[in-house]
Amino acid sequence: MTMAFEAKLDVEDGVATVQMSGELDSRSAPRLHELIMDAVARRVRRMVLLVGELTYLSSAGLRCLVFAHQKLERGADIVLVGTQPEVAETIRLTGFDRAILMQETTEP
Image (tube, rainbow, N blue to C red):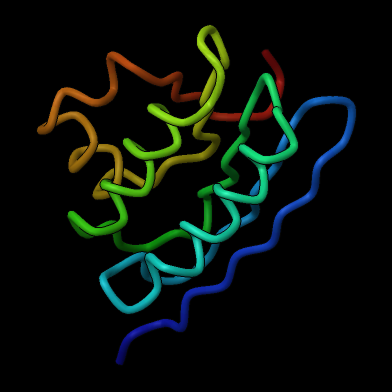
């Protein structure tokens, strides 16, 4: 049984926070893409992705992260917080971990 993907965007003081849970795959990636477009339109300087409850990341989900990295203003940070081992492994295998920050908690 797959867990439904849920995502919620909050933007405050130039920081976009996206809370995600479930499985980020080809069916759910368009939802994250929408939120990223919204954050980009608001010219955020930092995107914090709370992924502690994200259980799966497909190539489509990874493409959303790469898209965010390309579209955010130069120098903007993308931070993944609480990444599950399987999700972190997917990110590391692609080398994308060098373009983003991965943290255990929201504390810098």
